[in-house]
Image (cartoon, rainbow, N blue to C red; front, side):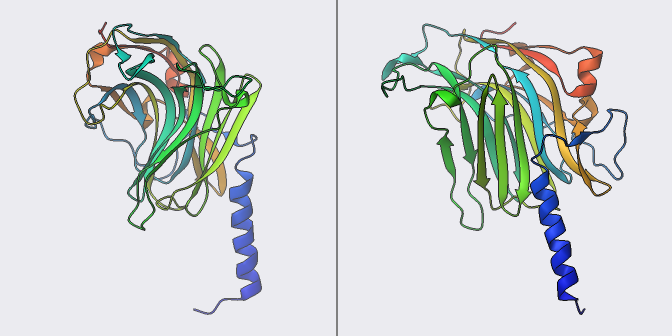
Amino acid sequence: MRFNFPICLIILCLYACSLHKTEVKAISKISPASTIPNEIWPEKQKPCFNGAYYRKLVSSNDYWLGIEGKVVLPQIYFDETRRNPKKPQQYLDNPSVYLGGRMGGQETDIGLTWEVIKDEHGKVSSDRKAFRPFLRRTGHQSGQLAVFENAPAEKAYYWYPGEEVKLSLFLVGEKKIRFVIEGAGKKFQRDFDCDGYAPKTIGEFKRVNAIDQFANEGKPVQKSNTRVEQGRWKETNLYREVNGKVVAVPMKKERYTEMMCPDPKYFSVKISDSEALQGGETIAINGAGY
C-alpha cells in the first residue's frame, strides 16, 4: 500500500496531540447509564494473591486507557504488638491506597503508601509518618527490568489521613503512562516507562486499598489487630476512547471484579445506590476481622 507522507504525518500528529491533551482535566465523563459499543464485561471471580489484606476492584480486559479516582485517605490504627524488630519505630503492617494495571504481560502498582519522611532539617524520620507516592512495575519480556521507586521525601509530596486526593493513571503513548496525584494543595506527577503498555492494546486496570505486610509477599497473611478505616472513594472512572474522544467511564459495579483478600471477613464495605453507579464506597480493613 502506498501512503501520502504529508497526510500520514498529519494523522500521526493529530493522534499524538489527542493523547497529550488527555492529561487535561476537562475530559468529559459519560453517564453511568451510557453504553459502550462492544464492551467486554469483567470476570465474576479472580484468585487472591497471598501476602496482604486488600480490597481490589479490577476492570475487564478491554481497550481501556487508564483509571482515575477521588479518595479520602483512611485513618490508621496500628497493632502495637507488630513492631518491626529491626526498626522498632515502624510496624510490620503498612497501609496503602493505589491504582494500577496489567497490559502486555506487565503489571503496575502506583499510588500512595505509608512512609518515612524528612523534616525541615533533612533528617529522615525513624517511623513512618505520611502517605508518599510510589511507582512499581514488574519486568517485561522486552528486557525491561522490574523497578520500585518513591517520590522524593519532600513536604510537597506528603499526604495524611483524612485528606481528599485525586489519583489518575493514564496511557500517554507507546510504553509510557502518566501518574498524577493532586489534593490538599499538593501535586505529584511522573511519567513512567512501561514497555507492555500501548494504545489500542487490551489491558485491565484496578484500584486497591490494602494493609501490606513487611517481607510477607506470597505468604499467608500474618494475624494482626491493625485497622485502616474510613477510606472513602467518592468516584472511580476508567479512561477509554469512544467515538474518537477520550472519556471517563464510571467504574460502576457491573464494570469490575470485586476482590476481598484473603477473606471477606476482614472487610467492611458500605456502598449507597448512588455510589454504586459512580465507583464509590467506604472501606474499612481489620486484620482481626469484623
